[in-house]
Image (cartoon, rainbow, N blue to C red; front, top):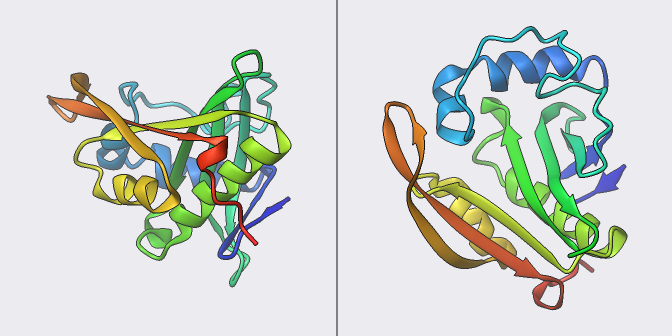
Length: 178
């Protein structure tokens, strides 16, 4: 388990899957604004579903986000497309609607950075987010990420093309906790 101030990141449990699926995947309006792939109806029992605990990909480290104060499941977090040769990875988080707006996402990103830099020995972490995802853009800046560019109208979401903003953070830019 990885500990932050407000959240801990732990392995996904079987009991997490239906909650994450119902509140993150099945929320179509939220899904189309935060995911690059189009929404499709899938069963939470699907072995390779987005919140499956069967994931064995070497380039993926996925976690359940748990709020420290309550012990309640708060969302999902991951390092994906982990490239051990070039020592970089992408960060992704998705919080349940009840967990948003309380600093949990920022703390989860900090914990993922600590994991990526200190445990995996990565050199660079990056995240991409829609230009209108104000919360994620604020989180990226708060944690210390640098805005590196905008891909104009890079993906189709909710019936329109949206810009994608790229942020990067290097290990020597990371302000380690403590």
